Image 1 (cartoon, helix red, strand yellow):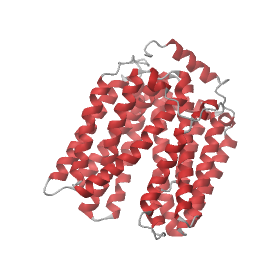
Image 2 (cartoon, helix red, strand yellow):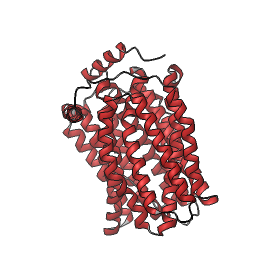
Image 3 (cartoon, rainbow, N blue to C red):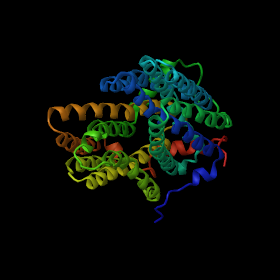
Image 4 (cartoon, rainbow, N blue to C red):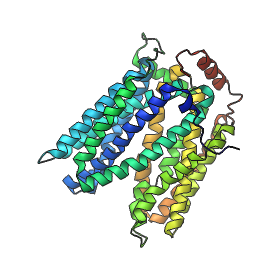
Length: 423
């Protein structure tokens, strides 16, 4: 069995290559800005509460813009949506840079522009998901999901490291400036993409399109199950906010860095050795297994009292989470019709964005109420139990077989008739 990653989508589709590498540059700068924003806000306010409030500022724009972004992705040219939002990212990065360069940087500017960035990102995300489906052949969606995971894992390692290096050595303004410069690379790449035809009738109102999306979700318990599993996995077992507290237990100067690197390290290793995923046909079962393993890894992390065991448990969990993402993305792209893909992307965004926010609050509150070890271990075991319950409650997810599913057959037929796919 070939365990190595399949790069066929990059090799076959010029448009997908442009979307892939252009997106990597933009995401790299965005990750650097993520670090610089929190760093500068701490420098201005000297308040952990003020930094934590960034999550609250982001929540409402994420929900509203994400849902409407799904409607936009099915109504308008997805290429134009991505270009427009990339331009707003660049403007926001420049605004953050000028604020950082001023003699008296303002916290409210950071909050405002952060909400602006999250709104634009939430609008862009459904179009991005839909374009990935459109530019990659139906049978190569699994390989595309793996490649996307590899890209974001590398970006999540390099981007924060670069941002952290810049803010402590030359200042936050340099990180924001780097972000703006990255969009000068990504924007021309996205402009070279082919425009795609509109997929839904323009005489339908936005409300009608949104209602159709909700109705479609309700008609697909297998898809609903993927959303529930992702949400529950993060709500029960999202450990990142607790990493500084775990690191404080170890007499090791590099403990915090090791723990932060563990999840993306595990994800990268798992995706680089993910050739076996092409042989999997029961996506729902693979998703359930991956999410349960994620929970068990987090439980082991919470129980561990040795730094290297903790690193190994987190890396194991990171690998399981990466495989969960691969099977979810493949399930969606191979079974959701192109004319619905954008609206489903908006709902997907909520499932994987709200989960970590909820999980951070749960972990912090339970740690304050009980103990750090209990909070993390209970959360991991609770995740495994909750995911198992979803599998029992939604047999359509457990029995989903890509070889026989009627939705997959329908999408495969639609994709075979498309003429815009460029080899």
